[in-house]
Image 1: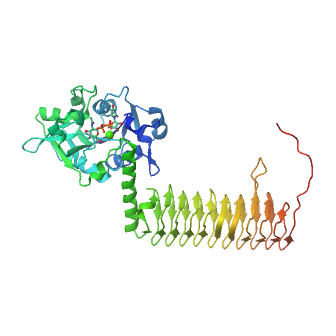
Image 2 (image 1 turned 60 degrees about the vertical axis):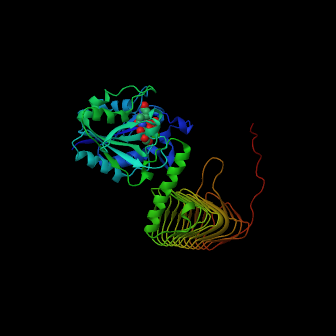
Image 3 (image 1 turned 180 degrees about the vertical axis):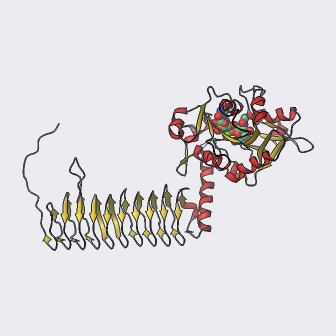
Length: 450
Ligand code: UD1
Ligand code: CA
C-alpha cells in the first residue's frame, strides 16, 4: 500500500525562548528535525513532506534537499498544518502517517507499529497513546464505557474529570488518505482560534467509524520537546540509549553519566572510556583503546590500542598504538602513524608523523611531513606562517631535533640530521649533518604600517 509521511514543524516553539527555530535545536549534534526524518525513512521511501512556517528560511537552508518543504502561513493549528500537504499527496498515497517534529525519541519500530496497525484496520485512523503520571500538558485520550476511543481533548479545554485522565495523545497518527483530506475540512475552530488535528478522532466517531489506539510500551519515546528543560531530558535519555548500546557491544564506560557519545560514532571492543569524554560527529575508535578522562574527539579516526588522555582531537587520524596526551591538541589533517607518541602540550595540524616518531613535550607541528623514528625535542616549533602563507616543513627519517628547535619553513632536514638545542633553522640541513646556533640578526628596517 502507498504510504507518505507528513512531519509538522511550522509552530513557533515559543516556550523554547530562542531565536533559533525549535526544530533546529541540536540534540547530540543533530537538529531535532533530523530525528523525525530518520524514523520517517523507516516507513516510507519517498521524502517526507515537512510543514514549515516559523523560521522557514533557516529550516529550508538546512533541509532543502532532505524533504519536500511546504509553507504553512499563517499557522492555524496542527489540523490546518496537515491540510497544507493535500495538494502534494492527495493522489499519491493511500495512507498518510503524521508525526510532530518535536519528538526526537520516537523509534522507527513504534512508527512502523502504528502504520501496520492501521493497514490491518478498516477504520480511518490509528493513533499512538501512552500512560504516564505526569500529563506534561498533552491531549487526553477519552474512551467510552466499552473502552473505545471517542475523543482527544486538549488540556486547556479538558474538564477536571478529563484532566485526571492519564492516557495521553503522543502525536503520532496513521490515516486512510481518502477519509483524511475531506475530514480535515470538517475540523471546527477551537476556542484558541486553531484547527486541531486531534479533533479528527471525534469526527471519525461521529461518522460511526472506529479509531484504533496503539499503546506505547516505553513512554520515554513520547517525550515532546516544548522547553529547554524537555530538551535536556530528551538528550539525557538519548545518551543513555547510545551508551547502553556500546556497553552491550563490549565497550567499558567507567562512568556512563559523564560520557557523551553522538549517534554517528563507532567504538571497537574492549575500548575503555574514562569520565568526561566526548565522542562527537563522525568519529571511529578501534579496539582496546583507552580514551579519557577529559577528552574530546570530533570527526576523528583512531586505530587499535591507542591511548588518549585529557586531549582534544579534531579531524585527526591515528593509526594503531598511538599515545596522545595529556593536554594535546590534534587538529585537522594530523595523521599519526603506528607507535607515535605525542606528549603533553603538543599541537599537530595538517601534518604526517611517521611510525615511531616521538614528540614528548611542548611542541607545535604544522604543515609538516615527518619521517619515521624522528625525535622531536621539547619545545620544537614549526614556524610555518610568514604572515601571508603557510609554508611546508620536511623532516626525513631518524632526524634528532634538539630542545627548542625553531624550524623556519619552508625548510627540509635530510635523513639522520641533528639540531642543537635552541637552533633556529632557516636553511635546509643535509642528511647526517649537525646544525646549531641562532642565525637571527638585524637585516633591514621594516616599512611602517598605520
Ligand atoms: C500536540 C497535540 C496534543 C499532544 C501533543 C504531544 C494538537 C492540537 N495537540 O500538542 O494532543 O498530546 O502535541 O506532543 O495537535 N505545528 C504546525 N503548525 C501549527 C501548529 C503546530 O506545524 O499551526 C507543529 C509544531 O511545530 C509541532 C507540532 O505541530 O511540531 C505540535 O504542535 P505543538 O504546538 O507543539 O502542540 P502541543 O501543544 O504540544
Ligand atoms: Ca509539542
